[in-house]
Image: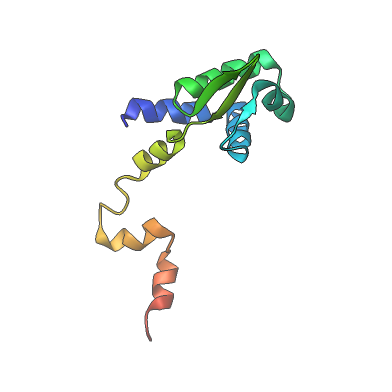
Length: 116
């Protein structure tokens, strides 16, 4: 992933309605939801929501499909995973002294583990 792709995905999630829509769709994986149900669930009108969903789709976070007259959206299989991998790909690479902190272990946890 390039920095420009990561920035587009972060920007796509960096708005309250889009973030709420993404979180709602995560709850309904792997099937997704029709646009009308997303709009009802979020209390947003369809035209506004459609613009938000289209931006997230362009950023690679969502996929759409048409079933009869309804458009369904679901989370992209790798959209967020690729972003998280990009953000953390150099985790712990700078220093072996920081290795524990990459996995949720704080300096306090390390001290508590040491024998007296």
